[in-house]
Length: 289
Ligand SMILES: C/C(=C\CNc1ncnc2c1ncn2[C@@H]1O[C@H](COP(=O)(O)O)[C@@H](O)[C@H]1O)CO
Image 1 (cartoon, rainbow, N blue to C red):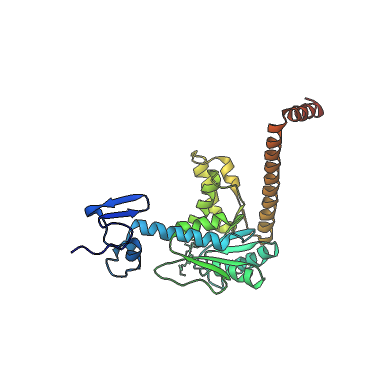
Image 2: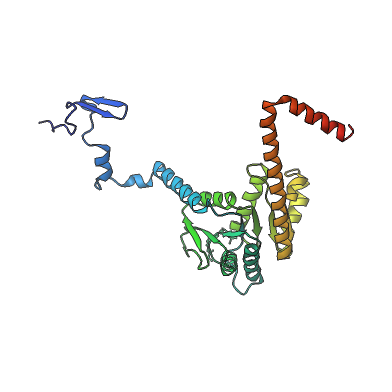
């Protein structure tokens, strides 16, 4: 015997799902909501790609939500293995403190080593100390100096946050993870996927060999251009690094203001072409050309 219709106003053998009509043997015996609320049934869908896409989306949403109002920030990258007695640990801590002094929030990977040191310096200086952690098989969790943090499941979502919310990068000595983050930043800037930002490689003896190879091999072999080598600077001086970042930030602000003024002029000129001609004539007259 047929089950009674769950929609008293619709006949058996007829089903409407949004704009879709189903009749006769196409009628589903349960509603979407029933299936959503029913905990029985197969669970392998949690390991399927469509479900992963939703998890990835939710990481972007959580990350964007957490960082949207962060303000100016600098990402500090570097080895997870740097010990507290290493001079680079002290330097990263100094970076954390001085970046906060210069008005920046500090973003790290939220892990141990250099990340912990930079978070410690930033937190102790009373600034915003951000940790974007990553779930790893040998999970350590966020270091204790992270004041605003999130643990990401996916490296690529997390890397988007490092780039989207930072106005510059400090790269301390590190391994594969650090190189990955450095070259992601350089590639995005080189391909104009992001506005160019300052990148400081800290530690001349550590990074010097890499810089030499980039110049003597990559550049000579035509795999990069000379301008690409100007996307970063190398130093052993924290104050010099911070001045470089601040100066680049001022340059970027001035360029953004000029671009906004030019856009406003374009809009005004579209309404008033004579004003544009007068301005152009004045410019040509005043520089003598
Ligand atoms: C290796 C150990 C723990 C790893 N824990 C990490 N937690 C958070 N972020 C990490 C971790 N490991 C690497 N990263 C990211 O890569 C960069 C450092 O990698 P490297 O290979 O050590 O240079 C760093 O900036 C992080 O974003 C146990 O000690």
